[in-house]
Amino acid sequence: MTLFSAAIDGIDLEIETLDDQFEVAISRHEIPYRDGALLENMGQKARTVNIRCYFWDDGSHLTYNDHIELVKHLKNKALVDLVHPMYGSMSGMIERVSVRADDRELTAEVDITFVEQLRQDLYERENEDVEAAADQAVIDAQDEQMEQLEDEAQDELGAEATEITSQELDPEQDILEQFSGVSQKARAWIKQVDAAVAAFEGALNDVTQPVNSLISTISYGTKLPGRVIGSIARMVDRYVTLYKTATTAPSRFLRNLRSAVDNLISQFAFSPRMKARIRAAVATQGAHAVAQYYATDEKQRQVLRRLEKQKAFG
Picture 1 (cartoon, rainbow, N blue to C red):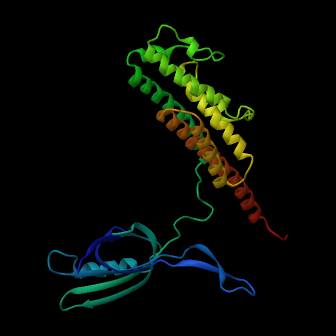
Picture 2: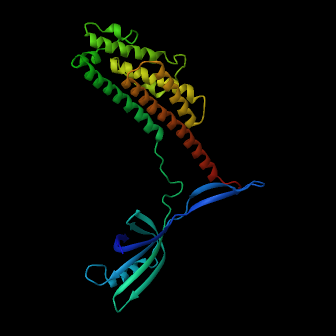
Picture 3: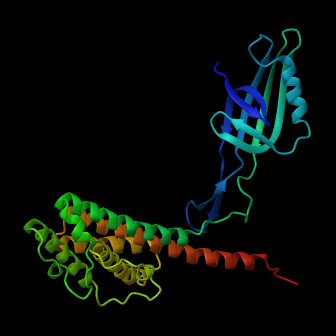
């Protein structure tokens, strides 16, 4: 027999786990003239945990008198805290206590049935502001992508990369024509970047981005990393605008967004790293759009909650 360490309200125990019950409340909606029933999962019922505590006087275990103190502690007790060896800390009530004691051998077994308390009070859950968290994630992603572009330039061009990535650029001109006196290798790399930016800026350029779009509020600066990452972000933002207005289903929106961007990637000879940046933008900005779906649903849910609390009759 293997004994495990546990505790109830700070009282140390040596227990054997007997059985646990995890029942689910299933609502059965019977439909006339149809076989079977429409089932709805209404959540898990109260979790019941049965344990057996052992006490004996052999100098190395809990003593016979310890079981007496435990039984006294559990009398007329409201909520207790059980630290279970597998489930960790649990709050609940003791439904049943069964004691088998041998006064001559100074041994005792105490069977306890523990019922877990509601894990979180109804209507008191503090919901995280998912939309604000998604906003920050998108902003952080832009900074990370620009830093990665600088690192890539360093890997490709060495010391020459610092001058290229730090030069101020005119947003009205092509990138390539603003660099002179660079090596042939650097010129080829800039040409590839310039072609990619042109593709980004030309994709869905007939779609007007909302004035309150998060991407439109981010400043990317006038240097090459900002020019590249900003053009990717604005392109993905146009795709988000197009497909988000076409459906109210988040899963369908994400499928359409990913499919459209994958189709764009297949049309151009983007480098593997540039493809990774596009997909990173799709992931972060797509998640941000889904967070907005969630925020809208949460506001509607709060309105319904307020209506539910109103009395139906005076």
